Image (cartoon, rainbow, N blue to C red; front, top):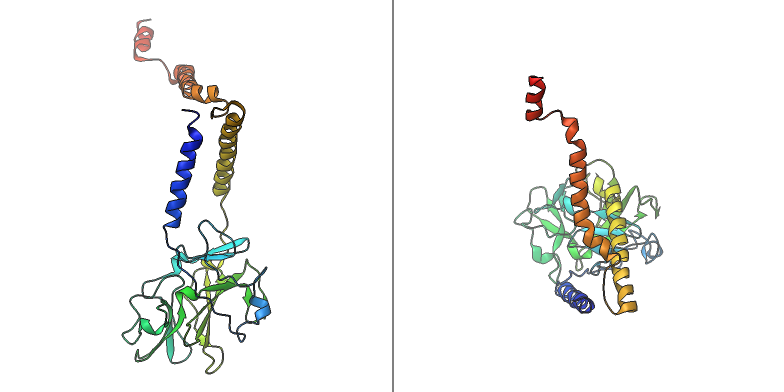
Length: 294
């Protein structure tokens, strides 16, 4: 049985890898960020720059996981999964239009009959932002879900911002060139602010939105403990089993006698504690009758 353990582990690993490959990954259709939004040297690859590539299976650094709607920026990540709505989150516009936003899922159904999902992209990309006239007569797409990008670049100050203060999310429609700049601010949950066009006929629309989703996710003490605990166990059992196989040809867990005896030790400890504390609960019924007889 011991000699067959490495073969069993290999089979399990192959099955896992095959299952991981069978899950299709949504691809991002990334366009260069409009220089009117941010200069190329501020949003290119590197520390503090824009992130746009899709996450590979298990990848959690400098990538975007559209399925979980999590943006991984260097050593921080932001979870936008709770901000998606079927018909989009409404943002009142300053002019004659209102806007509907989603980060990682298609706005479906569209907010009005005048919104045509086919207008979002010639390649069939899903609409994540719509610009809708207040009388609902005209509707324009302003961002594909698959074009989502994240950056710390602050459009107003024209500098790289503090990761703790928030993150800027960008989306664009590939054929019309309309950009939506969503300034996520780390703060209490509020509806999106009024979305505005940054300059007349620019096709660039900006909105400020305060929400806890704009704060980098912090790991709890419990999560850190679990990560450390699991890591120690993997090293202890995995490394010990491998070492025993290398030295003796038999794959056995380290300190096997102790682990095999552990259930009996726990049982003995339980009965010992039970017997040791039984006298603290007062006399039994039989003992009471004896006392009364005396």
